[in-house]
Image (cartoon, rainbow, N blue to C red):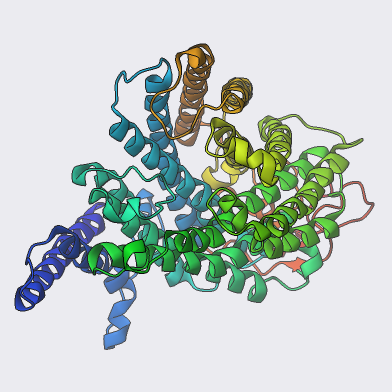
Length: 613
């Protein structure tokens, strides 16, 4: 039965929740407390529900049975049902992440459309302030999850072992565990309105996050769980890239996308532990009566902001570093030129990792922190623009005098470069204390963040979907629809968010459901163009759904690219390659006579030389 593992997971989760809730109620009764106080009961019930879900979905059948000396069950490696169960194949896990995150992205986009309906005219129209802020908060955390997990969970899982010539990741079981932790996160977020929602935004600043409705608790548990998944993923990718590279795949021959995942995984493994601590302390303040953030009892809410942003600004680079890698990967292959300044870009990635931990307090310029901290954090924030600028210059240098092939992936890569420049330039105003004080918590910040993440990473993600779709699905998409989607999205996106800069400069606050009537015209423009932007994804979804089912079969290497993932079939076989590849040179030596990236020995007698394009 195809859905049996999912049914078992749900049943075991329900049993776990009942056990956890009942045990908590029993302990509270013995302590002469309110037995069925909702937040302690929900918290402990969720912990055991998560354990039950994981055991039911496959941890018991395919992993834990060995702990008792029993033989684990055989995994299913063929047919569509393998995507609905516990499977350690990195390619299956990559597709699971991609499908899940794309569904969440489209849902989060619909929430954004609801927000723009409310903001199309002044006054409360379809939502009151609390409903608007709950919708805004859900949209924010869903899109942050999409930005973090689509590349690190989806593309990295599918592609990194292929690109380094490995059979799988270093820890396959931890890998599939990191994915199956994610569905409960989605369920918790979607359930928040049932307990009053949460109106704190995705940052969850106390004291609001400590005292508001119980929907906030579900958010905190979801965020903490997602952080655990991120830590496991970071550990796995670091071990995979360090230990499982094919013979000859030296650090200097790694594809730039793999380097970007390595850099992002360093941040993911280390920084995520900080936000996990912050979220846990807020949960303890709510559930256990601690006083980490209660000023009357000696707590300090500013402490949470430091803990939170010590993770969350580096987390921006968990999102954007892989986007850099995707874009440079596509630009090199579609320009038919060696990647310009490869070693400098690698150094820039690693410099970004280091500097990302030294800039967090620019988010606190208006919080009341000590004035003497303003200058050093302003300087470190502006310094990080140097390595990110190097990435932009590498893209331009690769394009310069290249033989550009303007297919859909390349269009999205070029769109990324333009959008990210706007995001980077406007970020300077938020790095400088004087202008940040004026622009803080206005729509200027919203526009800047969206130019960095949506105009940057989401454009890279969509471009990557077009680029690697033949490899993942074994079929080609409709190119004309891809080009239509790009221009539709690119133009409507820029109209939407450039207008947001304008209303932000005029002082319109973010996270507010109403505004002054004199800003009605600009907001109507933003809302209308946002609806047009949202409609472009109908083309995107229709193209991929139809192409996955009915599209023409793809060859192994439709782009004539040099990296290893294109030197095996589309989609790849279970063990990726017929034999272990031997890497002989750079993956970007286009135009270099006799250059070979890798040699394979496939069945059938071919010498397996990577074709020179």
